[in-house]
Figure 1 (spheres, helix red, strand yellow):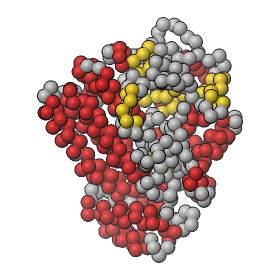
Figure 2 (cartoon, one colour):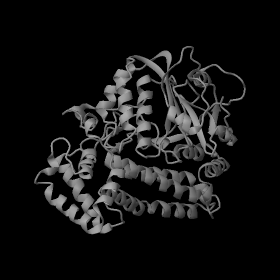
Figure 3 (cartoon, one colour):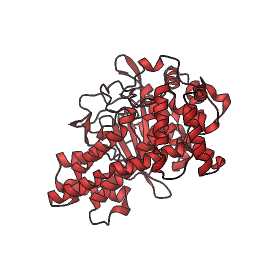
Length: 478
């Protein structure tokens, strides 16, 4: 059914372990992403065919599943890691010659499991499916979810929970942590092989520069800045921006303790394991810069054979981060306000708005939604006297700069009406685990058109009940 390739296995053996996924006697599909199957042109004659391939006990000798080795800085501390419960089934090549990993999560132990059972819970896998698909429809680079299936087993966490696997699709699962692993556990030749492979697979246009590895660093920094700018645009908090969760391909992935911000506050944290606010909403730019510095350190031996030259070149690249970030961040925020131009003289307009939102405890998504549609959702606080001076200045700038219709169109393209509100996500997931998929399917239907504002869907727009965020926490999807 699948004709898979295994280009990753051309790397030295220390970068992976060949491993067979656990087989499950009674797997059962819970969610199947028909749109993604069609998009990738994966031949599907029956759901059972896909399940049989991914979760069955096939031994036809045509596949070489593997778990990837990597390391990473977790909350600032370096540790050896690796795919402890994820197995790449192979690389699917589309008709347009695009290459995608197909990976199983929750498919059993590997040599990198570090004492874990290699399994996953249904609720965690459904969360990843829901949020990753939502991010895709928000036009943000992301892993995609092909299916979620119950395994027919119970897994032990705080309590026994329904076990499941998720099939994930990405351009690549190579991470900053893969390069850290190569630097710490391999030779310079291993690091060079990984750099060459990554460039060939993801960024072939960067291969012919004076220092291809430096070109790789610059390219990854650019795509990561673009990605985190997009997160800030929609109020997304990744929650665990460790270097092992930062993809070289610039895709969002690993949706464990992630969440969407309701009331605007740059210090918002929902992750149960982020006790210091390291990965708070407003600190995400600082953290992606920190992570890029770790990639630069890992690449030093292949940037230039002379250590002092390599350090100088890498540092010059990282030193450009702030300039690039500021320009791209404010350009995006001005687009959210309908202004399409690079205008440093208008950065104050964004800063004043965010200060007002913080002071008035406004909902992040709904504030921009109200500005976009000339309507006020919820309390109507935007119509209050505190907001009017800023509102008048903004409208005056729009009137001078361009037409109202063009501005509104830009705002509609950048300001979603619907995001996965945390209380709705939890409600839908809790019901789905019991076998009732109605709420989950309704929510996903709305999230497929996040920029299409509809008044009759106000239930999906309203913030959570008072007090909900005070105790809300998200967890790593184990």
